[in-house]
Image 1: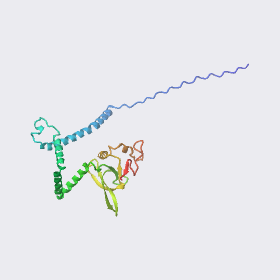
Image 2: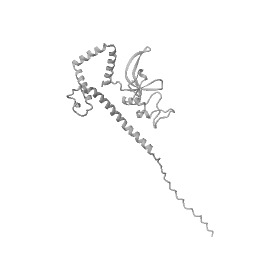
Image 3: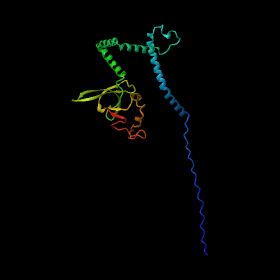
Length: 262
């Protein structure tokens, strides 16, 4: 009887090798790099506060040195105290301005104001300064005015180059034989937004940004360093890619978050 040869025994299955855990080695930050980071963070935290307090202190000292003299020495606490109290001149100035406002709103005050306006309007050089200053102050302090409350984009100084400006009003004039509605745009300079140019731009060429005036002023004063998050997310790089992911590149003709002035 022929016996079937037994098949050779199968070798035992090789034990699966357990994966070796990958250790991520973080680069060690040196003392100089850490000290530099701490120093920059401290400057970013303290510099704005210190600068703000310094400007406020200089303004209070300036007002105190001139307005505190209006207080008689008998009623001035600085006469009796061994130290001076800052802010007394500011309080005197606020009280004086409030008193002038109360008097001006009355009948006698309105008569005096109209008489003063007529007198100053007859002086050739003074009337230009007085009229412009009064109009600017009335426009800025008016609660119902929308002037200086819209940030716009215009193509300046050439096509495909956009500049940030502030809409200050609109006028309708006749140009090239047809009526044209123009928008008054104040184009500020960097870093001093108080200086700039006044431009009359056709309304169809003005793009109104969905941006508060405060953010627009910060954008101008910082030279673009302090910019809104949506503007940073849609900045187109020279190669056509976007500066952050996700987010499309800024269109060449219609900026993001903007609309044509209507």
